[in-house]
Length: 120
Image 1 (tube, rainbow, N blue to C red):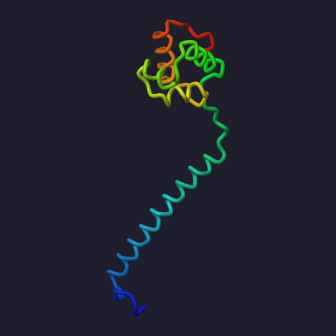
Image 2 (spheres, rainbow, N blue to C red):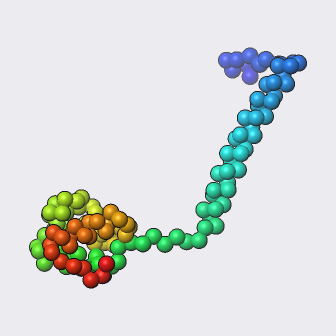
Image 3 (tube, rainbow, N blue to C red):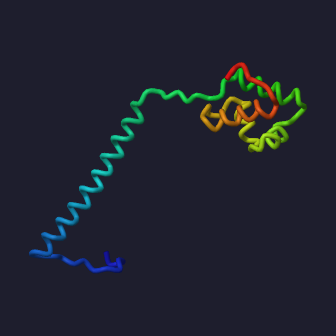
């Protein structure tokens, strides 16, 4: 330990008892956090498979057909709808999560191109 920059100090009496309580408290807090994290990990590992709903493939095909009938690529289609082309790509590929934002884009497509999709 000669290469260390500090000198060891040995506490005795009342200060030693207080210091040991502080060390014990810190160790308990760490172990509580570790227990909590372990419980979360256990729940995740034992959770049932959660199915996240994505855009139906039939709807994606309808959107692709509409876009190609209008002779638009994904970028131009997205510009016409005022959305990012990555959103259109995700919807057409079926990767987009079928949430409120995606449904909003689909409604926007219907309004802009005056169509009603069958497979919503």
